[in-house]
Image (tube, rainbow, N blue to C red; front, top):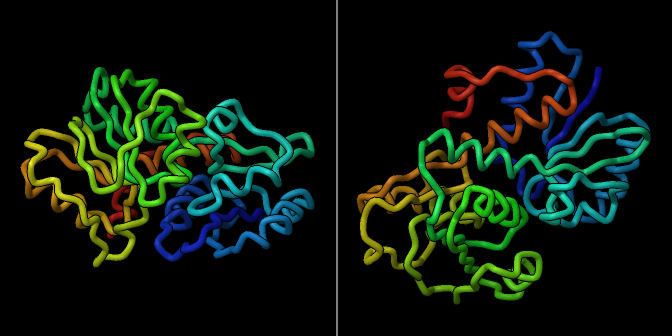
Length: 264
């Protein structure tokens, strides 16, 4: 039986096993997908297990999307450009890192019929998924991208990758069309982003990369203020779709049954 993993810390919130094992069963594959909590000092042994064939593929979530890179043999074009990896597999005896978050986010936005063209995008956070969101937002024609992070140093590191983005001091709210929560605030139901959005107006898009819980306090606030809101469920599904296709050579089905698996 082939083994696949999602790694992260924390990892309890991840619904990747539910989704991938659903697709594995649906396609009659002899495989299993599990989640594993790791620390930085576990990454080298993980890569050795992949090289030995003990693990066939790995999804990467917080906080390893960037820190896993030095252990890999090669990167896809998208992973190189974003310095971010969320999918790993063994190809020609080399452990290769891919980034399926970019297309996952882009496809999710297209599915909710929200046009990013000439829009001002305000991103909260500077974690591993943020470069993918910036890359996708540029592809979709956004006019301006701003990021704000509690630790400014991390925001500066992302600006070193994408020179044209604007840094905003944490606590300040610029004029925007889309605000994206890419922090981990919201994984716990009690988490709140203590920023004042009461004066931003209506008909903006509040987007949260978190999908579990399905409605964070950030999204509840956006809804209360009269804005469009969306969680990260579709992004999660579409990035997983691409990882599954990469590993198994099969395009899994995405339908209402798939989406209901993630309803929490």
